[in-house]
Length: 631
Image (cartoon, rainbow, N blue to C red):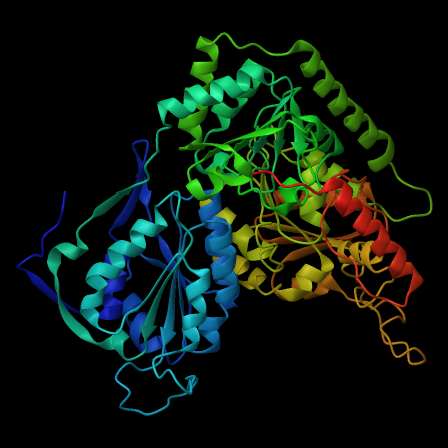
């Protein structure tokens, strides 16, 4: 029902109005309601302390304030929270003018690329301009109304600068609409000039009444369902690629039922990891450039790829090399038309749960059955991969430190139903794609849309905020830890227990491996001292005490170097109530088996180095042989 302006008025500042408004916003899906924005993170400076800070003090009783250590990190926490709640709730983030606000831009990009809702409230320059150029204001030579906050525009789903109090009457409802839109959500940015935050206005009283925002489920078009059934009817080797949309639609049971009924193997993208929640012989695990080779093998020969809630980025398509069947067709189930039409697919623009239900019913009515020989082939490939893991990955190599594969193997054994693991960049998410067991209630949250280092610890805090029970494991490399460990303080301050597992391999070994594959030489990717003769960072490995660093911020810590030591530390950490950090010495140059899916990272086209020249020739040959377009 449309709302009309109330005759009753309440005089409030802009900041006070925002705080009061946010406390009355709720989301609803399938009859279940919750607070849409239950809390606000913020770091105060002169740009927001007298505006938003004052408003939270006086009016924020139901909008819990959280104190982060870094503005980028607080956005990542909001993202982790939104992801863990399947986009039914998020958090607001307030920052002061200048660097405080621009620190949030990386978080905004991470949210929007992954289509996860966050509400950003960066402070801005004075709108009145009486003061002349103010501290931290950008003076653009030809556009007087440009500020650094304009950088938020390309990385926000919705952006508005509130230069007058009454603009909130339209800006706030639009912000809530975008936050709860399953197709178009992402970062919502309301830039707040530091003077306007304190400006008063007589707001209509009904603006602050309770409002419910329904997260709708779009139903599939019946004609598209009929066309999809015809694709299924003729397919001999179909495969499902499950993306993050399965989680956001809560379509786990429907995905499992559809796969089982038609005998279709399932591979998962980074965003979709854990979409197939129960053990299944048709579960191929992670499918991507860093996924399980059994999933890559199935995809390479599939004649029908059924994509459910995925954006089909280059890691999922192998830079357009993963689908080698000359007759391959695509069926894309996606709530966003932009993604549903990719790869020349038959588009089924709908909520993933509703689309899978309708498609399963139509397939049953059409009498479609599994292809028994194909099902057995998929099962055999998965069994061969499991056997290889047991014989190659989870065994100790004499004379080496424990491998990262062994580390994850122990985590798999120690994880229980209700636990969640968080990772984002470097080798951890790729290795979790291959070997993490995300069935039986062991969830997995991988941020790889933006592959944002330093996301992991704050996102783990966000995940913990959404679920009080179970362990929240944050799995990171030593390089990622060095980028932003300080949110440990926030976790300790709020009593939000997470368990951080650091794989200490003395550098960015994942990128070093790619560097060797594409340049032929190692350069600048390990933590070494400078060699004075070569004038390069090729000296001794640095000795960094990660455990002591974490302990100084209030965490309980362990240093381990064996699977047995790791197991004992994980068991002790589970019994702890405070944040824990386990530092694990891992072998630097031992990696998991490859996925057999190609990735297009070009080699230098011109070089005097014979090693690089050979790598370029190999790259050109692979590109011409493997890469194709689908339209």
